[in-house]
Length: 211
Image (cartoon, rainbow, N blue to C red):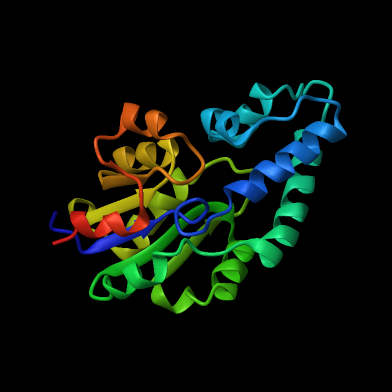
């Protein structure tokens, strides 16, 4: 691939956070008297917008406020992120080999929280732009992707989006990017392979797709 720009998803792609997300989900399920889920069940159902996967595990938002769920999740996520969350082991060494590329982060996370998390991990200055959203409700990031194209003047055909979800593939398709999905994040590999022809197991496998 003739790639000059690489856009990375954050959660589940650069950072290994699916266990803490599962732990918080199960806290919420216990709180509302619903059945807990396993990791295999979680990666079978996780999706964007995130309200849809909450419905799949039993939340009835005609009776429960989704905003209350989102507030609880985000509060606990920030607590557990700073206590437990780390980059995937191959991230730093792989980014070192991509220094000649224009690197970006594109995330459905709220912008201020995203900035603080990326800085905490010590990788903020490795990216030309860290782009999040103005929402804490995990609605997706397509609008932000279009804005990034315009603001950075990206050549779509020279841009690779690296993520861990079918939503990442959808964003890549809508934007005209090439796409690589990593199967160690928030969705099961078989789900990724149903939509995307390029799916790998490890972050370092990105290098196979770069000139």
